[in-house]
Image (cartoon, rainbow, N blue to C red; front, side, top):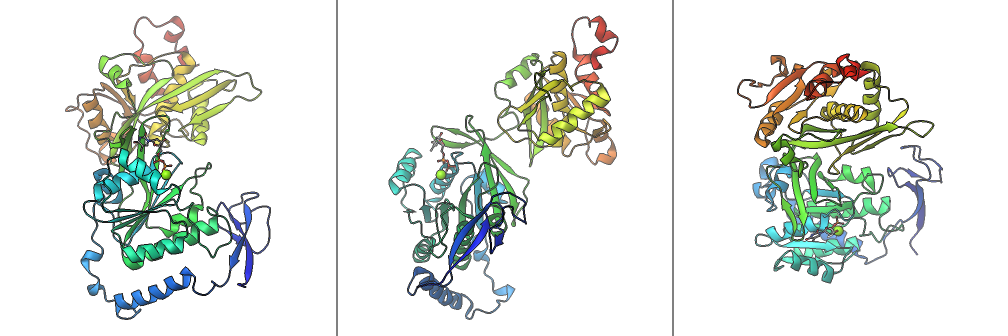
Length: 496
Ligand code: TYD
Ligand code: MG
C-alpha cells in the first residue's frame, strides 16, 4: 500500500498547512482550506514511472548528458517562433508562439476559448500536426463544432484522456507541433488524491504538462477557467508556472471578445486582439476604434446629442485607441446610505470621483444613488476615463446632454486637476478618422514636456485643453448647451 499523507491547501492562493485553519495565513481568505490526500510514492509500473524513465532517456539523447549545454549549441529552429495563423493572436503573443513555451488561456466559461483554439487548429492544420486534449468534451462533440467551423482535421488529433500522465505519454508518442489542453481543471494527476480542479491537482497537472512540453520542445496552450471571483482557479500558482498568460474576456450577451496578454516572457503585454463572435465562430476585428460604440457611431457622424448621463471616452488599450460609451444614473436615494454601483469601472475610483465632484464642483451627491456602467461589458479600469465618468454623473444629475461628436480624455487628481494621459496623439488621430469633431483633453498633454507632438493646426478636431475638472465640465456641459440658458445657469448655479 502506498503511504497516504494529507495536507490542507488554500484554494485561493495555494498555501499549504499541515492542519486545518479557518483563515489562510497567506492570503487572508476565510474557509478556503481543503484537505487533500497525497500519495508519497507511485505504485510500480504506473505511467508516472514509465514517463520518468522515458524522460531520462530523452534528456540524455538531447544533451548527450543531462549536464549544461553551450549557448552556441542551442539550435535556432528550437526557439524560432511560428505563427498560429490568426494574425492578431500572433501579435498579442509578440509575433507568434515560441516552441517549448506554455501559454495559459484564461477566461470565463462559455466565453469562446475552445472556439478560438479550434480556429487556431483550423488555420494551423496544413502546417503542423496538433494534439487537442479535450478533457471536457467528447471527440464527437469536438467533431460537431469542428465541422461547423469547417475544419477538415487531417492533422488534428483529439485526445479525450483526463489522466495527465497518459496525456504526456500520448504527447511523447505523437510529438505534435502544438498541444492544446482544454481545460486544466478537467485533467487530473493520479498521484494526487484531491478532486480535479483543486489547487493541488491544477498545479501538479500543469507541472507535468509544462515539463513534457519543454522537454520535447513543443508549444502548449492550456485553457484555464476563471472562477467567479475573477481569479484563475488554481490561481496564482498557474500564472507563475507558465510563460504567457492570455486573458479572453467580453460580455457573453454581446458579440465582442478581447484577448490580452497579462504576462509574456517573450514579448510586450501592450497588444490586444479584438474578435466578434457569430454563428461561424470568431472573426478578427480590424480598425477597432469604434467597435464598442456600435450604433452610436452614426450619432457621432450626424452630430446628434447623447442622452443625459452619457459620455464618450477614449483610451489606449495596448496599441489600439478605443472609444467607449460611459453611462451614469444619479437619483435621490431611498436607502439610509446611498448606493454606489460600478459596472466595468473600478468601485474605489468611482468613490474618489464622487468625492472630488462633491468637494470641487459642489455637486451634492450625499443623498443620491450613483450607478455607473461602461457599455459593451468591457472592464475599463483606466484613469483616462475619469473625466468621462465625472461628465456622465454630472449630466445625469442636471439632466443635460452633450453632443455625440465630443469625446473626453483625462485623469482627475484629488485636487480636481486634470492629469495627462499616455498616447494621446494616437487617440486624436483615430478620433478624426471616426468623425469626431471636438476633444476635451488635459492641457498638460499639449505641452512639449509631455513628449508628444500634437499638431493642433493639422488636426480636423477642435481640441480643448483643460486644467481642472471645473474648467472641463464648463467646456463640456455649459458651453455646449444650445438655446438660451436658464436664469439659474446664467448665475453659474449649474455647479451648485
Ligand atoms: P466555447 O468556445 O465553448 O467557450 P469556452 O470554451 O470558453 O467555455 O464557446 C461557447 C459559446 O460560443 C457558446 O455559447 C456559443 C458560442 N459560439 C458561437 O456563437 N458561434 C460559434 O460558431 C461557436 C462555435 C460558438
Ligand atoms: Mg471550452
